[in-house]
Every structure is written in C-alpha cells, then in structure tokens.
Length: 119
Image (cartoon, rainbow, N blue to C red; front, side, top):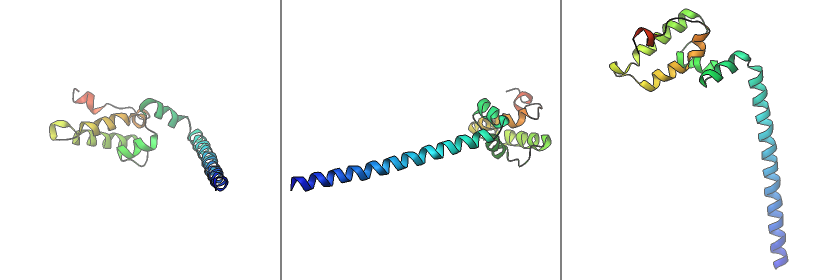
C-alpha cells in the first residue's frame, strides 16, 4: 500500500514539475518576444518612456491624438488641461497624466498651459 502511495506522489511531482518547466519556457519566450518588440519600437519610444514612464502610444491616447501634428497636439493638450483644472471641478490626477504625456509635446515645442496659468 505504501509503495503505491509513494509511486502516486512521485508521478504527481513529475507531472507538476513538467508543467512548471513548460510554463517557465513559455514565459521566457514571451519575455524575449516583448523585449524584441520594444527594441524595434525605436529610440524615440525608449526616450519617451525614460522621460515620463509613458510610451508614445500611451501619450497619444492621453492627449487623444492620432497623428503628431503640432497644432492638434497643442490644441488637445490645452483643452484637456483647462477642462481638468481643479478650480472648475476637474481632476489634478488627469492634469498630471497630461503633464506626463510631455514626450509627444517635446517633439513639438510650444508654451505650456501651466506656464500661461501661472502654475
């Protein structure tokens, strides 16, 4: 009886060990693929990510722009910054997200609404 119990335990440990090893290999492969994808994204995305913690795609989503035209970026930034001002019941958190979306704006310099408002 003890012999069979020991065999069952050993087989169970082997099954779990194989499953764990397979999952680990898959995770390493996925991690490597993600690193390769980040590497192909270009230096601009890496620079943006280092400056603000956001990728250019995230910054574009926050600023609600599909292309990086300076006029559209500036217009959306100013509008969203004013709408989210605390004095009109907006969200400081959303304003800070807009500020972190600066890498998109760094590509197209212009005056910041925070400088215009004296913040």
